[in-house]
Length: 271
Ligand SMILES: NC(=O)c1ccc[n+]([C@@H]2O[C@H](COP(=O)([O-])OP(=O)(O)OC[C@H]3O[C@@H](n4cnc5c(N)ncnc54)[C@H](O)[C@@H]3O)[C@@H](O)[C@H]2O)c1
Image 1 (cartoon, protein in one colour):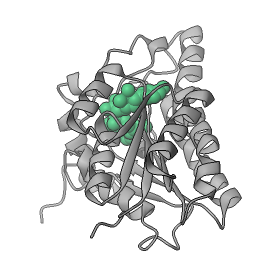
Image 2: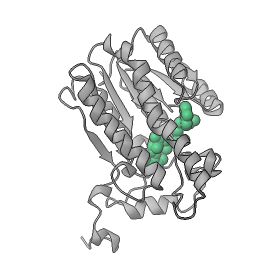
Image 3: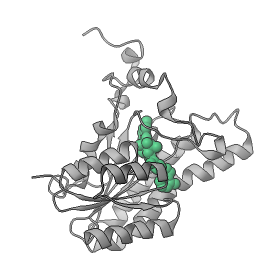
Image 4: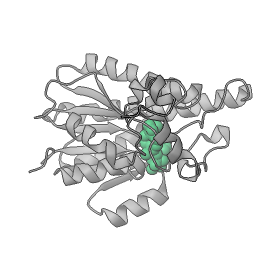
């Protein structure tokens, strides 16, 4: 028996990386899953590999696209128990000092549109269906950048901090009917893209040769995180039986980055 037997979930950005791993894990836990994603290429691969997943091609920053995805989910699965806001883009550490003003402004609008407005509009579009379902929940993908500097540039870091605020406000506003929580992955090997305004639409973490070493060196557990490493946290937060009393919290799934200290920075203790 799975932890999500008979539950229905919609995952944004579910055609790649962490979102796709969540889709696969939710299916394994007995859920019926739908996806909203903007990438035709990623969607084609998802449809081929997992034909039972209901897929909507669209942009999370469009309320209409979110509404279409929710309608497709409800039509196929008869309801919606969990909304997972996950689609996101990065800024590849763009520094304020050297990024031209107009570029910085464009990157702010683009990144906040996806990483913050996308979550808010996804919740707004999902809410009627969530409120009609049993034990509804919302889970957002955050980042170590939601709590610490240097997990991105100022714009990405601010967008993930903003999503923490969304979790707290929504957990308050939607109680007692809907639980709202987050998972904050550390650096993870995915195809995460940057903002077009920064000329990074084709830039991918996968192409950064030093990224695995950087991830390993900056978390105390010394692990190179893969998308599947985070999925248990999403399952827990979506599970009515196992997280009935959990709302307004974020699980840090980052190899212990929040307790990174001077010893680790110097190469780790000799244990
Ligand atoms: N990879 C990391 O190191 C890392 C670390 C912490 C947090 N995150 C967060 O994880 C989430 C997922 O990213 P990932 O690393 O799996 O990247 P990914 O690029 O592999 O997956 C993201 C998916 O979201 C889709 N997407 C992007 N913009 C969209 C939009 N406007 N509308 C609809 N779909 C859109 C993409 O097409 C892609 O399929 C993001 O919120 C990201 O900020 C990633």
